[in-house]
Image (cartoon, rainbow, N blue to C red; front, side, top):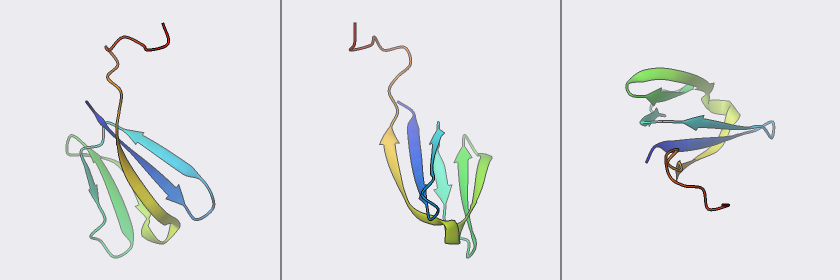
Length: 66
């Protein structure tokens, strides 16, 4: 199962990132989002209200809506 991260921003926007392996919020002004040790997003820390981790559904799994 891959991980998804949802970021809620101060302007009301929500951003969803798939296949996330690490979120680095240790920097004073940036939140860095990584997928397999590759930087996929940089967010201004001041703009981020919160972020939440979720399990992504497996793409090869059968759909429950069948």
